[in-house]
Length: 298
Image (cartoon, rainbow, N blue to C red; front, side, top):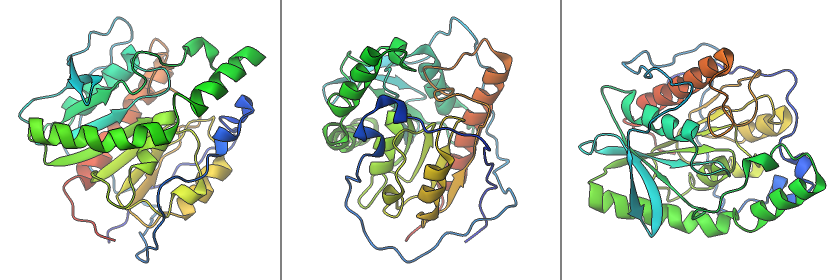
């Protein structure tokens, strides 16, 4: 197996969801665990693809999405990218639902790889009732209670995981999709992790500023996997999770970015945030280019 990617570590990350005061921050693994023997090799030397993956110019304010809304498995779904593409990406948004920054990210994923453009789909798993962005970071006990209740009820993984497979199956049939990747933000990172195990429909996955990182979720992952933590993720949690992986993987820290910088909480009018937003998407697109069309078997 070829060497993989360098790992950038943050020196002062802080736990992300401990402020909620709810056990959901350390959710027990849900997916079935399997024994895996093959070990992926990591290297300190970067071999990131230098293929033709160039992210389009990021719009700081007033972005106009390139896609449309369709209905998939009964859910309103943002769809973007060329309809002729035979590969697709399922985007699992953060708890704040459809935001301009997240929609722009979907468009970037769709059009950045000129060799392999993607159809990209972002379902509204919360059915028009996402968390209020004013709740995070929580400033009052009421905010904490609302966030905790949202994670435990509306955002419970057992409610979402079956729909992931249904959505992929429906779109594969209707849109002629042959290969799938997945991207998840915050809560969506947990859903993507649990959807990347035995029987997964995905060839490769990436999570950005993921929530509820748990070491027990790592050994069951069966596909190449990238994680992009922010300054707010727990270094200890991420390192324990990474040690359990048996697949080609990348852990790329963004130590000066807050949780949410690639999705709803991205302040794209800030030059540094905008630059790291662009770098984050470039990292994901390059990782997909490297692994979407490769053969990997455990």
